[in-house]
Image 1 (cartoon, rainbow, N blue to C red):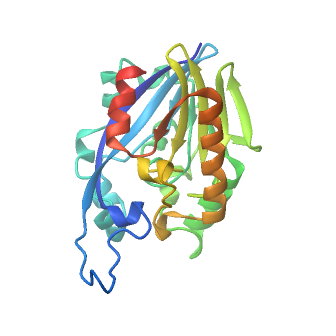
Image 2: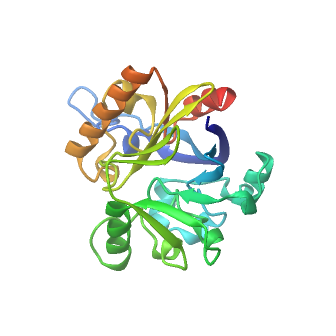
Image 3: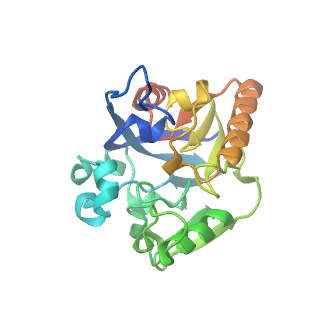
Length: 262
């Protein structure tokens, strides 16, 4: 059966209004609401399945403060990125970069593809959904799309393996799920382990309130709310069917709880 190791890649501070649509909005009763900044986790995962070792995402670059556009770093402060290199964090989890047989990119936003260039020129397969790859290049090379894609993260000598459908099996017990909404090509996963089924929601749900309460992400983090709600119901149905654990994209409490189990 697949084995999953969750890898802590540091923290990002951001206003909760980016994560929960409607948070901190003024009203007649509360014309000047307080804003709350929350500490979010950045994580990767190593999945051993079918005789191969897969890396899920590549995280935030160590030089995020200088590398990211100032408005984005100002909104999503990756304040400890310099303390978290991909190689060192993998080593802490018992792995070396050379152990990685393939990479799965949930999506290509700058906080998930930050050290993808570690695999440039290596011939390591990099799985990404077709819709994500197209939208990322479109966004990075035109004035349209989303500003959260940086061409230098993924516009290199990478061995892309394009996922075309809504479900894609990588190995027995390890299936990729297309969960559009946050981005057009967001990927999650259903992973059957000895500890139970792990449902990777990723940035479909940043935190528990997105999933449990159906509170959508803030407008800047939603490519399509209609698709986001469809993907949310897909995940909820899978949870009912499998009694699985749902791993969110940036919820620190959920990450720490599941890291103890998987």
